[in-house]
Length: 637
Image (cartoon, rainbow, N blue to C red; front, side):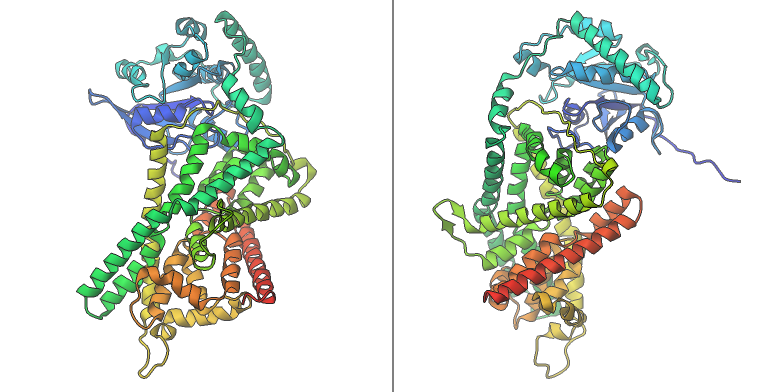
């Protein structure tokens, strides 16, 4: 006899935020809960429901769920299915919401109202929150909220999600609400379960008619164009000038990553040197001193120095998100991506993968076509994530001269730009190959994506986004990177070398033996035993490769070198061919183990992760082999 699974839910009332993408739903979630949730200006960011709590002065607490943005309650993608499962009470481990807050964008009532009408049919208590009323007034839109409330049969609360007190009216309403008697907000109870295709078609037609009637009654049935956005789009979406502007913009970003980061990187470098000198003077020549200087300081300090470059890159990504430009970039790239069998909708997950492949892979839930989603997952790790940036920066700083060409072009930034482009082109080639083996029936390349109005980015959102990125990076430095660095130091320090040993002590250690064994495999692509050692812990996190190289070379030296000595050490001991080969390896090499686990979780089996590991390792080895052999041919060895 099997026992039924019982779920125990918290006693606090549960409120779900429901709305279309770009309606300001997540911004309201921040105001209500104080949660530092990322706010973005394109659909597909909120790929999972997010939870927070709203505390009232009376001591009352309610739980709030920020559901993924949805255009309808007839799910066509995985993120919309998450929303539907919660609203229908089918989410595992979660009760059905006690109240639904339907977030309306005052700038797009025609589309947003359809979702409200669908929510009414669920039989759940509903309240409408009319957001972005400030922008609507500036555009000349006057919305009679009392009349709209009467037409919908639901209470309406106004809000401005981007202002600090923009949700005060909503908070006051929720504080005064009788949570034990919400029947007055429960309009109908037509659909208990998910609706059939016939119901969908019938409801869609009736909803369109009702929305048209509502807009006519409010004298809002005429579309008011956004003149500023239209003028900007005439240039930024121009078939000739648009792609050129996008390329120039990306090129400028990668130039800034190197040129702007010099001063803060020098500050961190000086701090690491100062700390290493203090430890060296305070401790005798002992294993503890070696652990602190050659292990922890060399490894962690070697990675930490690249934090400014990561933050500069993310500053520009957040700036493009906040301004509303990213969906335009997807539009510009739709034709190119269509030629390789994808649509522009894959652009957002792939762009997210430049931060980290894991959220990029999760963001593919917004792609309704199964074939497009699978291919996007397979090529997402080829986007150059922020974890690769320290490796690129290390090798570029060591082997590419720091000089400006023509008073404008920073050579190091140009090489970084080329590496990012190489990853993108490689991903497009893989997508094109997969297209050749895909049934025509599974291809759906049409792009339908909302283009939100342009607006000035809010400094508070930029600051929150950068702080989150810095916190994630520092947690990795103090977590997995620190653990792997200490572990590698132990493997590289023991057993001790025999008496009268002529080489460095690390060559007689466990790590040295592993490195020498792997060097046989990697010798054809120019990797020495030190690089071979660093690649193993690098599977845990890409940044670990830098800390591993710093630890290995610190222990390989005759004395305790400073942590910042890695650049001159590798520039003097490696050939340019080896450096170029390692760069080519990292363009294609698989990401961290967490990425593989995320692919397994999203696809539901080990088949796709194993396929991904196989083809990425094969591409990485082939690219490194060709690069190394060509470099030797041209005398760069």
